[in-house]
Amino acid sequence: MSDADARWLRDSNARCDAAYVDPTTVVPDCYDRAANPGARAWFKETADELLELTAGYLDLLDRYGVAWVRLTTDAPGRVTYEDDVQVVAV
Image 1 (spheres, one colour):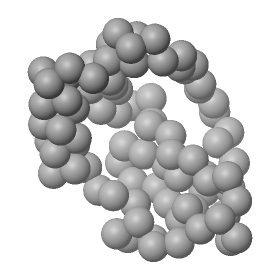
Image 2 (cartoon, one colour; image 1 turned 90 degrees about the vertical axis):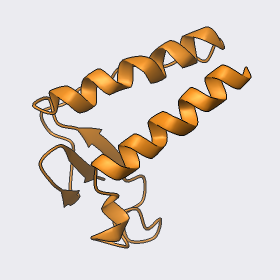
Image 3 (cartoon, rainbow, N blue to C red; image 1 turned 60 degrees about the vertical axis):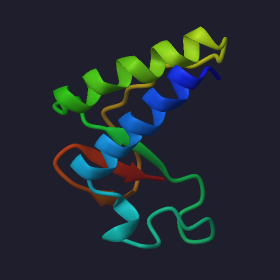
């Protein structure tokens, strides 16, 4: 990864960490492999600002040939954490 991309990634991650709750700080076991096997985070479709932020990450993946797929669902599964912008579910 180029120095510029590494800087962008570090800065963007820091902005996101400051702006959005880490689910594990509220529900420490929301990703627990035994209790919640396969738990994954989903952004809510109403989280416009957060979804827009993902564009830069997707551009970065594209630049380095990393494949990605956009998944959407109305039924994410058993919810282990939820806030205004995200859901963690099994």
